Amino acid sequence: MPLRCVSYLRPLIQPIWSTSARQTHAIRSVTTSGPPNANWPHKLHNSARLTDRKSIFLAQASMLPHPDQLPPFLEYLRALPRTNVKRATHCMYAYRAAGVAGQSDGGEGGSGDRLARLLRLSGCEDVVVVVWRWYGGVKLGADRWKRISEVAKEALNDGGFLPKQDQELNKARKKR
Image 1: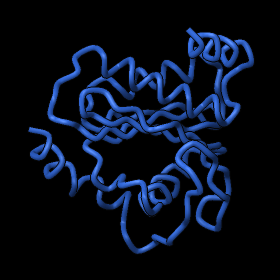
Image 2: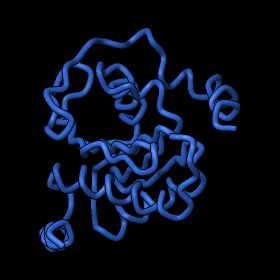
Image 3: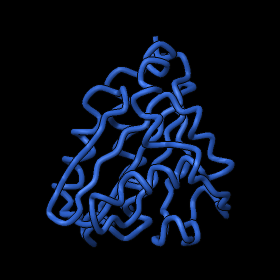
């Protein structure tokens, strides 16, 4: 079923992720910020890869000053080596920039709305968060929402986009 969705969506998203503007960039580590470059001038903040019943989740967050910069940001992410995002089953994102909010669930119904709600309730501004999921063959049910939120919060926290009280709360939860 996911392969049919991907093959159906590929022509629709291909213009966003065209190969003509791709360049090679290095990620130093999955859990550290990537270097700024000519295609994307802001730091990229990554979560650690989270695996749950063979499904893998990864989130990336960055500053997004204007909504028009979203397509170049998505192209930049697709061009990064060693992340295998091209093979991800789902690419969901949400952003808040220049007073405008938007989201996409990337085939994972309702996930874009949840990410947008996370940004709104956290008071994040001028930020985009992208969550990738590689489907492992086992349905996760409601646990997938927890994993999506968990990696998104980790990437936002790494970038300092979450207010201090949310950062302290996340640290306390990890210690439990």
